[in-house]
Image (cartoon, rainbow, N blue to C red):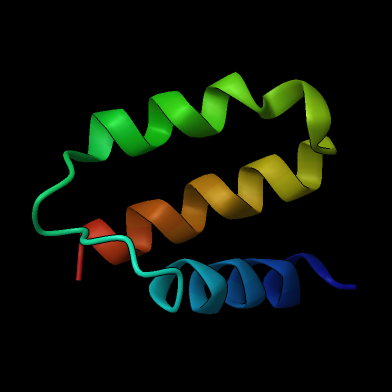
Length: 58
């Protein structure tokens, strides 16, 4: 899967996850993501972080 496709897929999954991004601070979401970093490839981790940033910056 191409990097942009991973980013779009991650963004869609996050938006459909049920997480209330208005009530959960971005730093908490990123901290959770960082805790699972060892379980993800570098490209996947970067795509998820980019997706999180996109969601909070919309």
